[in-house]
Picture 1 (cartoon, rainbow over the protein chains, first blue to last red):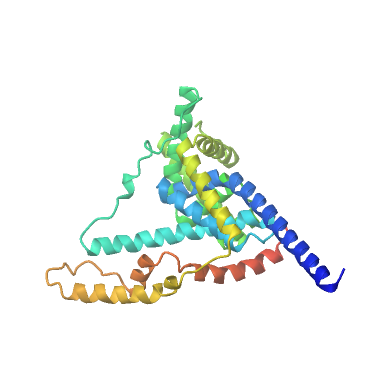
Picture 2 (cartoon, rainbow over the protein chains, first blue to last red):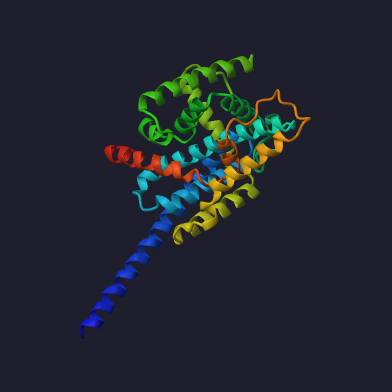
Length: 202
Length: 122
């Protein structure tokens, strides 16, 4: 075996290793996305009150995670993914605000937030008892409206902690703030929501 | 939703309602999510490519903003009581859907430092 054959074999083995590693990362990413995508969609939807926009935001977050951070350890993906998603949601709100200003300036009203139809967005009821479905659906609609009306940082803290189940440290990474701020926002969110939903029930 | 007696109970009830709404997502939405996932995975396979025109976006945004401003100044009948978009950057933000990546990169470096200090993130 001469030197060039050895070099070729080492290089070939290296390429094989790279390909195997890439495939493994892709499989792990796929598993991760399957695990988070539905909750992420609902979280984004509650934030922007539009399912199609929410789908776009989730897709963008997935793409950015896959492109830029796939080589990070898997246990960092969840806070990173939500960090990207929350940034996307904040940018979306900023764009909406600018768009609204421009539309007002041109003398046109932009799409009214109230156009978002909770009934049209209601979930598939297949396989559920009507009573159970109605109770769940009403409860979620009330909660969704109340969460949607929270200040942005409280909304983020509440959804990441309660809906996604992130701990305080991971929520702080996802929100880009201190753990103390997460605790404050979360506590205020719960207080406000309990108050609003209590009033709603009365 | 029954009236929760404490915060823990409230959070548990909220989580249950949320989980139920996640479980009930319709087939069309699930299909779109699946397509989004496949698209993201296809990006993982390919190195990121940035098109030359995307680098021109900030300049194009400013040029467009200037053009709109000149156009608006020449319109006599417009209602000037409503505040105009404050800066060219407003237009840039509207016209440029992708350049915010740059800011994310800046945040990323800070985040990486943070993550490395925290071994318990999960």
